[in-house]
Image 1: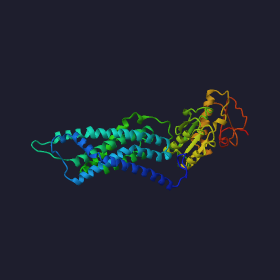
Image 2 (image 1 turned 180 degrees about the horizontal axis):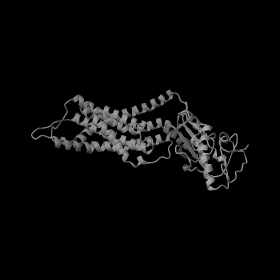
Image 3 (image 1 turned 60 degrees about the vertical axis):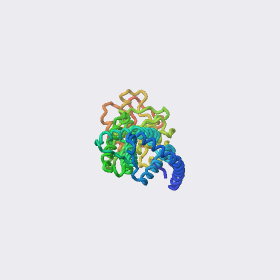
Image 4 (image 1 turned 30 degrees about the vertical axis):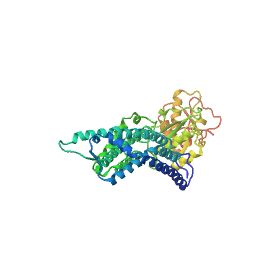
Length: 434
C-alpha cells in the first residue's frame, strides 16, 4: 500500500525480509572473515595495550586469575574488533535498506549520523584505549594505594572496566550527536516527551545496561542519569539547536471541536504566481515556500514530510486549486488523512489593475482569509466576513453564485472579488454576477 513517502511502492513484507536476509548474510560472512584475521593478532594487541598501562611496569602486578575468563576476554575482543572493522560496510548496508522509506530530513539525519558517528567514535575508541584509560588507571592507582601493601590486578577486570568506560563515552558522543543533528533538522522539538528524543534515550540506556559489567552494576543508575542530562546539555550548546525552520502551523478547532493544523504552500508556479505577504495570513497558518510543487519531486517530499512531522490536517496551495499536483502526493496526503485544496490565485483577479495599495491590501486579506478555514465554504465565509466588517474603505464586493470568476471580467479600482460570495450575500452587500 502507499505510504507517507511519495516514492513508496507496494511490496510484500517477504520482499523486505528477503532483502534484509541477503544483506545480513553478506555482513556475517565479512564478520567471520575479519574475525579470523584478528584472532591471529589479538595477543599482540593485548601486549601493546597492557604495556601502556602503568601497572604493568612492575613485574607480576598483572595477573590472570581465571584461564577461562581470559579466553572469553580474548574472544570478546576479537568480536568487537571484527565489528569495528566491518562497521562501515554495515552502515552502508543499513543506509541502502532504510533510505527508500525515509523522509528527507530523516535521510539528512541518518546520512550525518553514519559517517560522523563512525569517524568520531573510532577516534574516541582509539584515544580512550591508547591514552585515556591508561591515564585513568594511573590516577586511580596513585590515589588509592596504601603504603606497605602490595597490589595485584586482574587483566580480565581491567579489560572489562576499559570496555565499560569506552561504551559510556561512545554512547555519550553518539547520543549528543543524534540530539544535536535532530534538533538542527527540526526532527526533535523542545518537548521533553518528543518521540525521537525518547527513542534515542531508550536505545542508549538499554545498550548501557547490556554492556555494564556485573562488578559495575551499582553505578548503572548514576551513569544513566549522567548520560541523559549530559547529552541534553551538550546538544543545547550547539548553535544548530536555535535554528528556525520556517513558520509552523498552530492548532485551532473547527465547529465540531476537531483539531486543525493548516499549512499554506506559497507556490510561485515557476515564478508566474507572485509571493504572498505572510503578515496578511492568520497566525495559525503554517507556511512553506515552493517554486513549482507540480514539477519538483523534492518539494513534494518536503511537503509530505512536514505534514507527517507537524500532523497537518489541511494543505492549501496558493497558485492552483490543488488538482494539478502529482498523484503520488495526493495519495500520501490521503494516507495521512490530510485534505488538499487551493486558492487558485494564478487564475483569479481579486482587484482591479489600477487599485491603490489600500485596496490591494484589503483584497488580499479577504482572499487569504479562506486559507485560515479551508475545511468548508461556510467556515471560509465566516473568516472573510470578519475581515470585511473590519474595513473602512468604500468598496464594491463582487462574486458569483458558483464562486467561479467569469471569463474576461475586468475589475475597477475599488472592486474586490470575493470567493464564496453566495454564502455572504445575506449579511453584506455583494454584487452577484454570472
